[in-house]
Length: 194
Image (cartoon, rainbow, N blue to C red; front, side):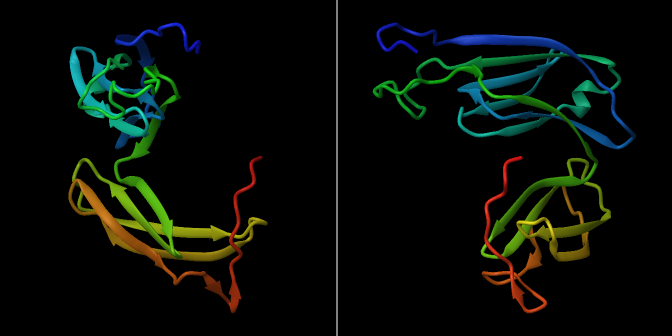
């Protein structure tokens, strides 16, 4: 970007039709946004299904109900990166406000009850279940942790009850600071980029 030239700031639309091919019954259809700035609306046909404010985080929209019964789903995404004193960074800064879809948008199919988030911190693995239908089912949760050579060092499975629209964070594998299996500490490592 040329610092001496003004760049476009303002509203913009993206439109497409997407074929819905759910692999089985009881599957949710999601749009996962890796980056859209700064204020975004998602429309399916004539229905607004989501709004999001903020251009620096990823987020997900469930379009299952809005797309129900349609083979070719019209999707429109509205992004606006106009200056707004109520948003960070403000117009008083010299920060470039990226606009539009500046990272990937992914089309995902997930089961009616699925993992929404997984966090690992201080040796504790916690997960949040996504359950928009409020299904009252018991689900199996399995945790597999591998060492840098992809050898399994932890395996745990348990049954947990999916309650409400979103089952809250829950420790599904409890270990202290370093995971210890059969007397050996698991090495800390960064994943290799293949």
